[in-house]
Image (cartoon, rainbow, N blue to C red; front, top):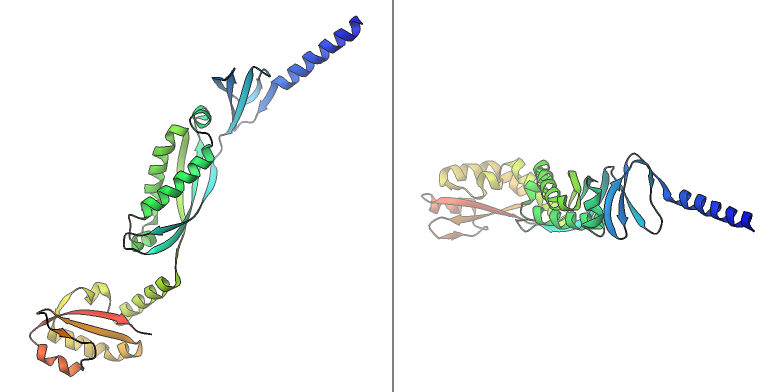
Length: 251
């Protein structure tokens, strides 16, 4: 009878010790709670966690790559685009990552989505396409600042795709074509020009404009409107006026 009790006690002690031993890898840390209260962070290597008295929550310290789902963004110039990104971050304070937030990964993902929409919504489409490095840095700084309380370090943010709808792609293509033949918004669209120069320019480009189906509208500075159907020689009556050149595309 005594031998059986001894064997039982020995078996219990061995099982207890075996269940108490935990092995944490080099990139893992264990947040230890003693009777529900935070005690310390342990690891890596072999650690002892007393069953029933202590509990351990593991956290991985390696860099985590998180995809930000595609977001619908309206730019400052009222262009609707779809944008997605990727966020690189890691846990630098396991205690905060366990105690300060219920699910650190879900919280970071949701914050990344709202920050992406907020930052890009303050910029125009041209900036989204040409200044990605600056936008990436702005988003990274905001995310890093807000996730610091969760023990997170955001090391990098990369905007992956800025997708436009088909109508916007066609509009950009038409703008590029207009620039190629010499009538671009940056050159003439918002610039007042003298009649003589204007008439020479129109004569030079008239054939290309017709071939590309570009319809010109003319607005007289003194308030008199000239319809787009006015013949070229009919503009002579406005020789002493300046013109604001505008255009639209007809298909």
